[in-house]
Length: 117
Length: 110
Image 1 (spheres, rainbow over the protein chains, first blue to last red):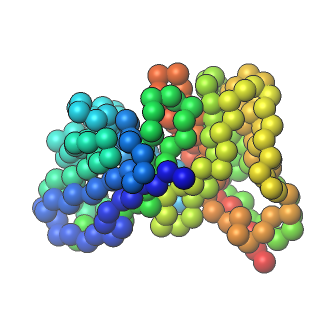
Image 2: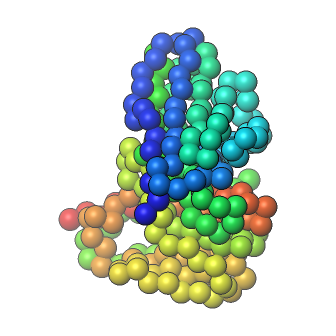
């Protein structure tokens, strides 16, 4: 089956620093990748949608200058949390879809636990 | 406003019991997917339902898509501790965006 690798799985950083999270589709080309944020025992909150070679589409309330998304290739998207603060601590998950059909399943990475101290 | 509602939000049952989780919306979806997520991991797809009235079975799990494609249910027969997790329904809309419900946290006690 389709595999999505997300790295790192855990990261602890100091307030004010930036953190980059990678999301790779290992055995398929991902035309679209999604980035989510999840708080404990809550659902996934869509942050942005990224398509290869174009600017990401951010959901309302998500600061695009704080959460930089780059979809450089059909197998890699990155999320950079800039000038991180403790309130940015969360579980970040990416997902990828191999085609543009909305019914196609999403393949999820295993998430990144970000802790900002 | 949640476009997708799930009920119950939390469920704790004994091993061997049956349960049903509901996913409801006032919107029509082109398809609906169910995922299960375990702590510290990403969600894993269980099933996709596309046709109104469709019923799909996956071992002890039965999924149903409402006739109007606005709601769905997940029924688990003889629940086992391995079924413990967060169950998420996700609706795919015609403009390509997938919307997740708030989730149902299931705990099956041995």
